[in-house]
Image 1 (cartoon, one colour):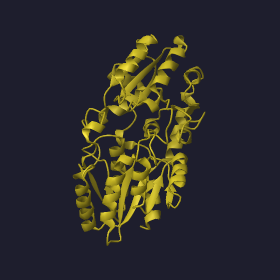
Image 2 (spheres, one colour):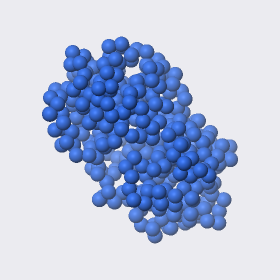
Image 3 (cartoon, one colour):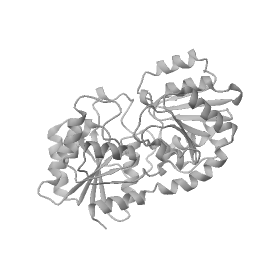
Image 4 (cartoon, one colour):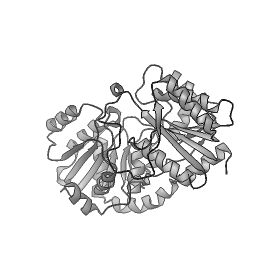
Amino acid sequence: MKIILLGTAYPLRGGIAHYNALLAEALRKRHHVETITFKRQYPRIFFPGSTQQETGDQLHGEAAPQLVDSVNPLNWAHVGAEIRRRQPDLLIMKYWIPFFGPCFGTIARFARRGTRTKVLVICDNVLPHERRPFDRLFTRYAFSAADFFVVQSAAVERDLRSFWPQAVYRNVPHPLYTFFGDPVPKDAARRALRIPAERVILFFGYVRRYKGLHILLDAMKELDPTLGVHCVVAGEFYDDEGAYQDQIDALGLRARVTIRAGYLPNEQVGAYVSAADAVVLPYLSATQSGIAQIAYNFDTPVIAADVGGLAEVVRNDLTGLVVPPGSPSLLARAIERFYREGLATRFIPAIHEEKKRYTWDSLTAAIEDLAGGT
């Protein structure tokens, strides 16, 4: 098949760019694949981060042509016409927030007009964690231009069936993020990152309220201090960092919490995840999270809240621990149990087996099945 992949891609940054790079690489084993990305992904007023450009090393492929302006309808028509000129068999779009519904929906309509092009939407979410006006309208507009869907958790599948019951779809586990290389020896990773603690847990990724960092900090206060657990927070703050710093001071945790604020360049991700005994996902809400797939790539167990599809990936008492959301006490007890029972020695071999389920070839096969390509 001739496939065009439309969405975030290098030189833009972030997990979706990484996902699209790995998906394109997997599809190219059997198909001709082109990628198109944004020249303006978010208006600056709507983007809380420091930059939308990747500042780290380019790890996969070449930079994609930057053609799409997410807020210019004339541009959408132009990009759609350009895709129509190329006449792909399949246009793939990764959908995560309704903001892109008008853009993606219009491009898809122009791209398929008078052609045999089919449109497939990979759903990170159907409707977002933090709701805004017009979410349903924008999502309906995008989905009505699609032929097929891929979801990657039971939670998103339920949302899709509820919101768009006529959807033709496949549910395929989110593949591993193999983007960041191989595991680094734990001691070497800690030395490189200047983390002297003997027991380290990691909160990784964008900091937003629904991801529950404040719950983890409260749990750190409740932990038995004789265990010597140190928490590293590595990621860019989309909330007020000062509020979390104040919480650390109010709880007396300054010596037990290290904050490395800012977007992690690609080449540093492996060291941070390898340095941790466990990655902690104390989310208050979620549909799925690629963080668990990053952790598994480095054979790192995960302690996660039981929200959305997290418990589908983090198999309780096998590859990690799952706790009720919103409870610092229960999260603290899980972290204590992880160390006191030496659960890493049992979880890590299980992760080796479990992660065999999360392959890009499985996703490619599902896409081929939907689109009828071989």
